[in-house]
Image 1 (cartoon, rainbow over the protein chains, first blue to last red):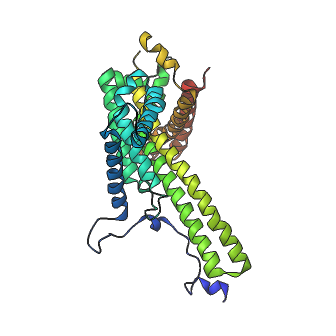
Image 2 (cartoon, one colour):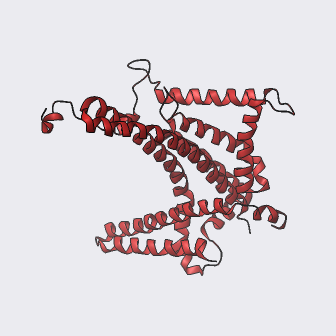
Image 3 (cartoon, rainbow over the protein chains, first blue to last red):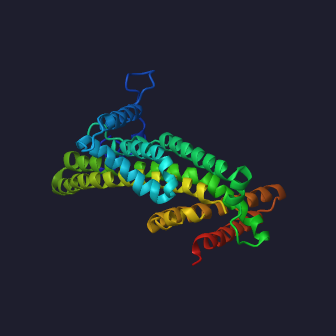
Length: 263
Length: 74
């Protein structure tokens, strides 16, 4: 086997690219329902069933399921809503808990066997969630401080000599109004995108080294890669939960900022 | 607001730090984007490329000052 020709013969290793994230329709040509959409539907259904069963027979001494549901909800309430917003945060716990559960489940689908694809690595889902959060925190700010007051507090932080505002006000407006939702969406998307790509690369690369390339070096290196993919799967699980937490926390902090800026 | 004071002190310092880090990042991006964009518009209009550079430098300087002003003091 001559190596320079390997690629031309179709035997070389083809590394996974952005194409990994595009799926054909599940039910054949001409239909639109893809694996990503299936994961979103399954995930939403799983969350609904989980919370329904957890809350169905609310007892003073909670069962296992009720305990699990209350743990998640309590975590969002205490560690995110009350911590980031203050006592007013109680009102926003339902939204934040829904957001956290939805993102966490769609992230974790990346390491669940068979599914093995984080639906949030497609930009549409985080972007839509970021737009919802954006509408909510802006609406709260405008409701609380008035339209003029909200933008005044946003664009003119007190204590700067007035000529400098000409320079700084557009920056503040752009950063709070446009950059915030975009970074919110991109951070989640590309964390999931990169994590999934690395996992796929380790698995496919390891498989290629062990089974196609072979030899002592190939099998040794491939085994390391395949073992690494197992370690990385656990690491990915950690990142996926962390990113769900970060997205929810930042939404809470933005809501807190919109509530608290009145002077 | 006086009644909120006890809750405000209960905020986790690490959580505020997380928000501040992304806030500073957003300001740096915004400064370059806004004033760099203005400079680009000016240079297209007046046909002199120096305005792009001036705009970018102005944006960087202004956003650095804003980051220091909002997060860097005390």
